[in-house]
Image 1 (cartoon, rainbow, N blue to C red):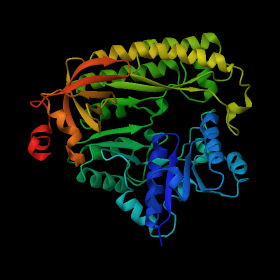
Image 2 (spheres, rainbow, N blue to C red; image 1 turned 60 degrees about the horizontal axis):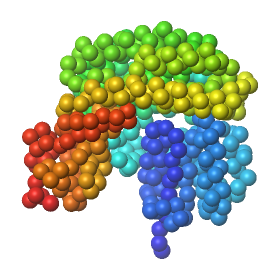
Image 3 (cartoon, rainbow, N blue to C red; image 1 turned 120 degrees about the horizontal axis):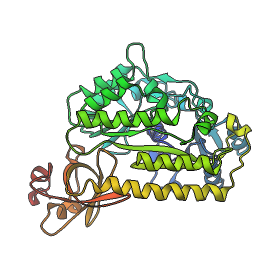
Amino acid sequence: MASMKYFIITYGCQMNVADSEKIASALEKTGQQPANNVKEADLLVINACSVRQAAIDRVYGQINNFPDKKIIVAGCLLDFDKKRLAQNKNISFWNPDEYFKLPPARLASESVAGGPPRTNKNTANIPIMTGCNNFCSYCVVPYTRGREKSRPASRIIKEVKSLIKKGYKEVILLGQNVNSYKDKKNNFLQLLQKINNLPGDFWLSFLTSHPKDMSDKLIETMARCEKIAPYIHLPVQSGDNEILKKMNRHYTVTHYKNLIKKLRAAFKKHRVNFPPLAISTDIIVGFPGETKKQFQHTANLAREIKFDMIYFAQYSPRPGTAAARLPDDVPQQEKKRRTRILNNILKKTALQNNKKYIGKTVDVLINKIKKDCAIGKTATLKTVKIDANPHSELTYLPKLQKRTVSDSLASVKIIGATAWGLRGKLKADTDKISNRLYKKSNI
């Protein structure tokens, strides 16, 4: 009898990506196999994100596209959404806490101990906690994932050790607010130190931090730990104090600016080598009651901080949140206009930051090989296109059929920059992998 096939569609954050890996592990241990596409699948799993209304609307759209297929909806779902979706009799639900409880029961211990299969052979997303206690007025996560729960540090470290042994080059610790991680013996600072002290050549980073919990000790630890990537994602959401108060964010613009100054100063002091600290953020445009003047405060902040990347969200109300009781009074066209203004600011600041890379040689994690180039990223999350030329060993990359994870890190000289990425060239004398892997005799 042929095994059933499944296909997973993932929406939302990297936590959902990690959860989809758990789901895949559970399904395969029950005998199901991955399908190449949704049409071939007997079972469709939609790992949903309901942080914004637009995201959950996409889930409804996917379900309507496959009326006769068995569907499981997982991820962050409000009861409001479940009741609406439950009208379709082909749909069942899995909550995030159930991914390790799927039949058979032995999946729980096996999945946690060994780790689920990874969709990326270079990068491993490792959830260290789930849930949130902050109750930002626009966010449903405390209602969909519950209160904060931290995984034991011993299990996290065991998982990281296993991944390093397998050759993974990037480890990303995940949580809605990693700064508040705490098990019986370790806080987040101690967890970072223990992972940093593990032997091996790898990058360590984490998502996401809350400005109210970013302590001076944590900043100092980040800068001193050499394996922690010089990158921080620190959501600001707004550059106006009144809007931040409405959002229930528990910090001021001045506090956020001071954090950025401390972060940059600490990394400049302890990291003498290039590249400098890269900073990304989240900004919500058109929050209820946001005036043009208040938006201008956000625009001014973006110019001042000079972010490397900004992830924009146009506000949409979610049932059950405090902000949903406020009038959504910023017109959609105005939200789009404000987003364009911020995006234009980002283009300028990101280009300025990226131009600093020109002429420098940086480590690049290669994720994709094409006919005439390779695509990778720096530890600061800069996308790099590595050009091939007739005299470069990169010319032979497309012919290489088997490439191990441990051979994916290369030294690349940057020769060009745009707002959204870098261009570089791979040289045999600076390439960490060419001498042992990309010789003609190996192809």
